Image 1 (cartoon, rainbow, N blue to C red):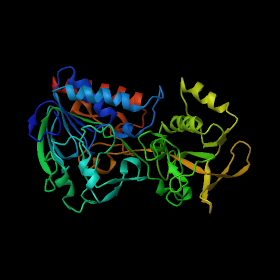
Image 2: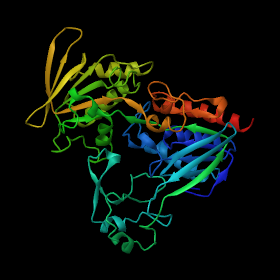
Image 3: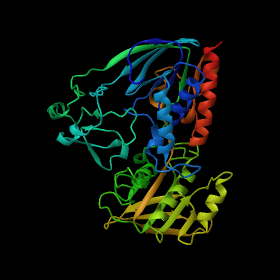
Image 4: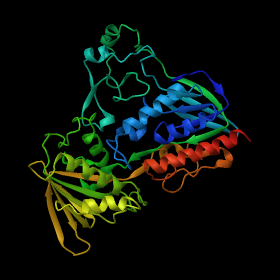
Length: 418
């Protein structure tokens, strides 16, 4: 069942509906445990839903998410609450009381996604799913694979003109819908709250926001995705130029005492993966990768070696000191080769910042009484029934996140069955 608001008791609460939360919920429910899955966004899937491809198979995430969504839909032990956040936690292991608040979607379960409302809506909003590189109407479907498959209204963009209400023959739209609060009684809580891309505007020298030719690695994922703002064409935002040259700037914020002190783990492989996106679309494009160290452990070494053999790809060991926007829309990357000592000034059509992973729970974690390390990752306490999973626990890729989520489900079940 999805989007219920009736208070319930017992079972496990999973906070976060990304790949870690989905995995933890399914692993627990499929061995007979009641699970309550809450997600603050209007849809499940988290960051994985925004990717074009992911490791290790370089396949689109749509197939894996579709299977998981079907498993959730068919499992009556899982209740899903979207647009919902934890407001307060009290109690102890085996007996937690959790206060939740569900924001208004303004669209009810009658919605069939017929699109009639979108066709008549006169207002637009920035599309945060595509990192504001395009727009949607004020009433919108978050993305093509949204689960639950229902529209949602952004009231900051909506003027309540009522045209969508008139157009909907299913009586699915309620512009006066109100937020709801409720309480769950659960034995244990799995925190799978995921990660946010580090704010690139905090790194002054990299000039993000000052040129359309400077984007982040997650923006690159959306540009490369068939359901992205350019339908999978890698075009420079703003002027839609087909880039002929690219620069990847690694460790954008990571391994930096002024920003993220830790290695974000995924960035090297993410950039190498995105190099393959470029190669598929622009076989002759010039590509430079500026790095401190290339971390491609185990089986990924062969992947890296193959790309390093490409004559049109340059790997420069050295940290970028500055990026200068140019009048023609491109940028000049300034760096020093740490091996040769050479000063480098390279003009490119598009620069991609490999921004790090910042734990999403960091802001509200303290107010909820959660234990975090100095970087904002959750420490968790399995004995107390508070368990961290996936990127809430540490920077990790999809495979590692799934393993972590499975372990978290097992620990949560143990608390429940003591």
